[in-house]
Image (cartoon, rainbow, N blue to C red; front, top):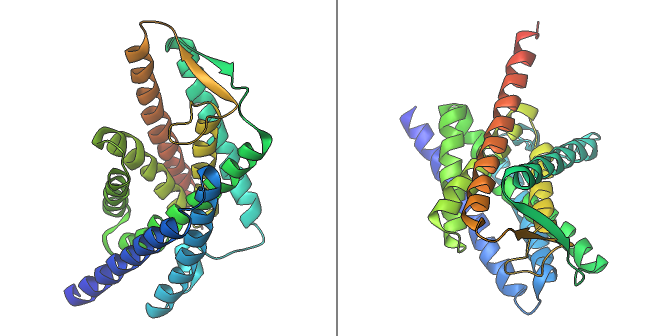
Length: 266
């Protein structure tokens, strides 16, 4: 049994390393491009590559894509839409918290163009697809089958945070942001038995967050936040607390819903 588990863990690590190398290669290919065109090309190459890798590794394990939630079905589009709507709702609730107690308002960003918004949407959907396949598909499902849900979710959350640190995020942002977000995306994957819902939530959160941001390393969205003078620290604290509460609260709702579903099964 120990040898079988060690072999399975080795395959999981190998899968992630292959996805990481694919990401680095795709980023190098897309380097001549700028902004969300670069993001879209990187996301397209990596999401397709991660899906193909998933096919190879589940075949290696004697499984199929359905066993890791990476199969396309007639209901995949609707499930993605449901997840996307939920993600936008979370962005809206987060904005309400900032407006209510964070001394923050929004003002129009006249430099944002429709084509830029379209590329941003495509880019975030593709990147979310890549990250969900690379973390909450094959790796999460295989770890959960061997060690249980919570050890698997924690392990994947740690690796997800480390990848964000390697990408330039601070340790605080990686833990409070990426790791906490991974808990929601992961439990959504496990409880809905597929990746469509978590891809939708993940893409909508990133896209919606960009829509009301100053842009960071990308050009800003249609709106940008304006914090009242002297309230920068308060706004930042409210933003982080609201994010953690919303993400973990929604994860708890998925867990509760799944428990209820199991209770009513014959």
